[in-house]
Image (cartoon, rainbow, N blue to C red; front, side):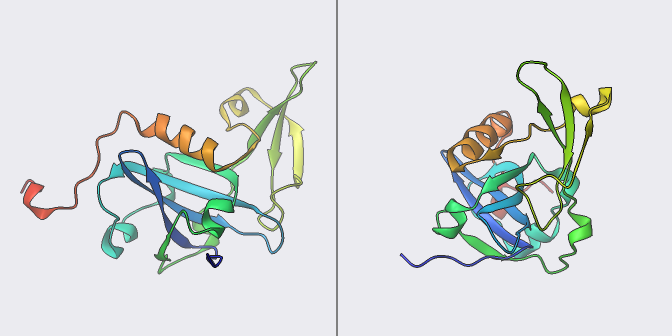
Length: 166
């Protein structure tokens, strides 16, 4: 199987046990397998069309994380197209939280979009920072597990017009 190419601003389908979620490549450094992804529910029974994708906004994300690009690279998560009005600034890279093992000290980390493996900034976490996402790089199975739990309560979106309420 040939490697699938992708770039920042590409939408991709994430097959889940009971439908599809949608993902967006928000950062793709020039080197390395770690990217920043935005993931969206609810689960859909069919892949969304271009019109539906244009309605999705960054603030609607169910999950934003740093992840390994293996599923995208291998084509398991199929690229559906490119965001027509892609602007990096509209899809920010969030800060993350790391807790030191022995001390339990909390550290706020921020990554530059061109390096998602070494933090650009680190500082002692404040109280509001304690709700930031954990500073880990997720692999494919952990993304699926996390996304599955987040979307479990949401009903799948049916694209079939006969189901629309007017």
